[in-house]
Amino acid sequence: MTAERRSIRSFVLRQGRLSNAQQRAHETLLPVFGIAYQPQLIELDRVFGRVAPKILEIGFGMGETTAAIALAHAQNDYLGIEVHTPGVGSLLKQIGELGLANVRIIQHDAVEVLEKMIAPASLDGVHIFFPDPWPKKRHHKRRLIQGPLVALLASRIKPGGYVHAATDWQEYAEHILAVLSAEPALENSAQGFAPRPDTRPQTKFESRGLKLGHGVWDIVFRKR
Image 1 (cartoon, rainbow, N blue to C red):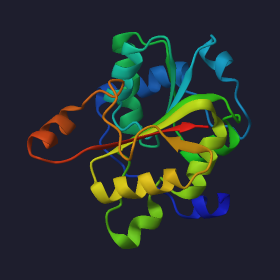
Image 2: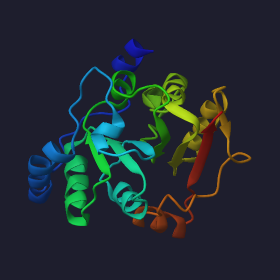
Image 3: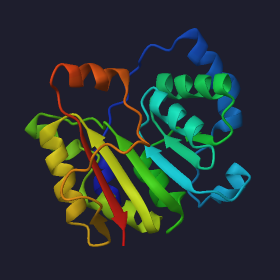
């Protein structure tokens, strides 16, 4: 699985525009709230300085949802993984502005982080919100949510913990539902797709799409 996942990435590193504010946040706050990639396990309670539920988010984009969730649920700790510097800078800026103490960031490939840094049965939940759907059939192999990754995620989640994915691409939603259903360590929390949990805020982009008749699908599975 490792060799395959490293040869076929689920992302393409693009040199997005980095605003001055994002660059300042990246330079000044990443040393405070960032965790450097290292091929060894980390102790999450030590990293956050407390014992609390630990939620991992893969691909947080510009970080608006991550920041809103962390602000609303101060009792939890959130570890965000993102490869794109503008998004990391954006979330760091929000961490500073909102005074969030319960968010940490790793700017690295999520598969390698999960394999090397996250201990088995150490996570209470995983969020994967609006991953790149790679809609062209020839690109489907690049999709993040595949059987090997789901098995890896399941191994890192505590019994009773959850995986919550959301997408606005119906064919990808059906793919995600099928892949999660095929993982024996997980069970669906709903009959098929789940209603949007209150814990996932509705983004402006999502609200605009819903008004135009576009769908959004939530998939929530629990570790047996």
